Length: 219
Image 1 (cartoon, rainbow, N blue to C red):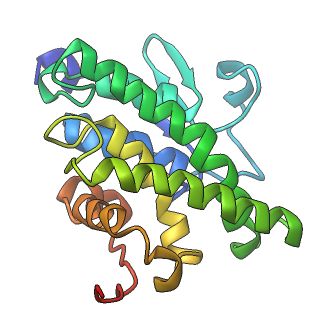
Image 2: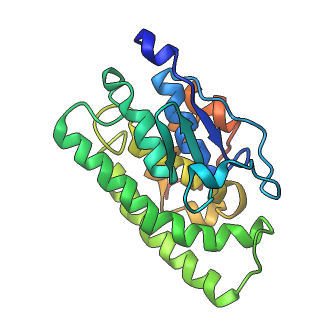
Image 3: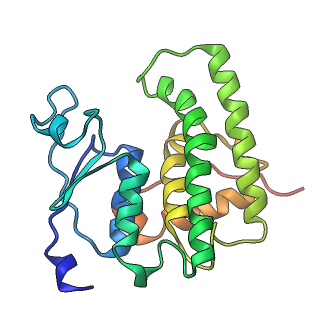
């Protein structure tokens, strides 16, 4: 890692443990980049937050060259700091595949999964019809991922990339609060991949211990 990266000052403002912040923090573990995480109270955000982010939302990454906002933009920025680590893929075509999975995750995974997990976490009131629809949408997205992982160890290439980081970080709350063994039964490839990722030290240093439900035996 270059001297300039070692001297970089990066501050990430976000609620501790939020999946959107974890995307960048896991990427930083792989890139060997230090990110400061100041204590953050959503009820009393830093006074300068609206100055560095036009909409005043978090996460926000404060850098020496300005602020970067939106979780995927922050994660992409961190991934691109170290081309030698190949978080954005080992080739130009792979970088396009990484972007495809990141965008897929935003629209097909995060949106419906938040509608399912947020009521479980007491972050919003549950609307039964919305939860039912969210479960079906999540199941559809996981089916696509599971089918892809039938022939791949990771989402892109032969090692962890930003695609794996973003999708795994987004699924953690589902595994913690919503996915039981019955729901996961059709998704053996996905569970294998998820378990492989969360047991990597770069993931566990951010996420802690993440367990998966016991799976049904085949047959």
